[in-house]
Length: 381
Image (cartoon, rainbow, N blue to C red):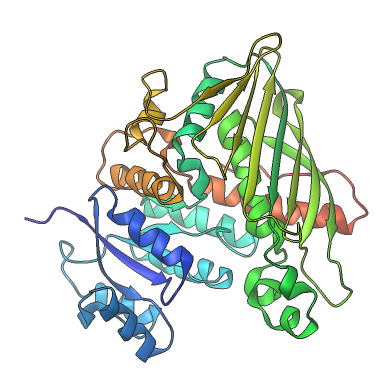
């Protein structure tokens, strides 16, 4: 009997990078089977894509509402158990809300919603639904990020003194300098993307990552954003000062106009005993820095790593693990939760991470608009 978790997918069709990332991740540990979904709002492309990836078209639906209606007609042992939301941002909230209200587990791309208010509503619904909800802050799945988290939790850095994250890309350069393109792309349209582009897209990764690895809460922010052109309503670059719990200070620098940069995400945490640094473009190296000692490089797959890191390592030492593996580890953790198996809280980002991420986005924009002042992040539970 097939015991795999029945997975539906919304969006992610055609040549979508995020689509192939999720599909491969779901297959990585043989925990899921894709049974249907809505890959594209255009019916011919929707069906064509399903056939291309080898799915039966009997559970490929014309739209999201039809998917819900038809899936609920099926017996529980045949119905989709979890649905992944890979659509543009403005669709995340209505889709997640209806899925939760109808008893489905949810895996949702970030940002989780387009407003903090929507995120709070989802959190309230989830508490009643008691299903599993994951937000795909993908980089938390890397083995050496998990090792970083465990070393900090175990006190190997001593008392944390500073946190620092830099996320630089240059992809929006060809768009932002062309008036027609910047007025027509959904990423720079507040109605489809929310109030922020750069901070909402990659700054929120940095925010979640710093809280994930350090165990601290970012309590308040002071932001300076860059919009570059008067007719552009969305930030494409920004610097955010941080005040964290335990009196720790930090900074997030994020940019999508860093010319020549690809996906340069670097996170650093400094304690009074040692510091740790990790670079997404070289994800198998975790740098341990101590005063008066040589730089040490920790790598995945070795027995000196933590149980959480090794659980997310699929290959022997010396074999690179990448972003597909990172997302696969998140899907693996969600599968454990759905199957009611024991799992570590660090195995996948939750609804609370998504809600805090939305508060961060809104407070950063508020800080900038009010003249670069300190603004408190909302607390949620």
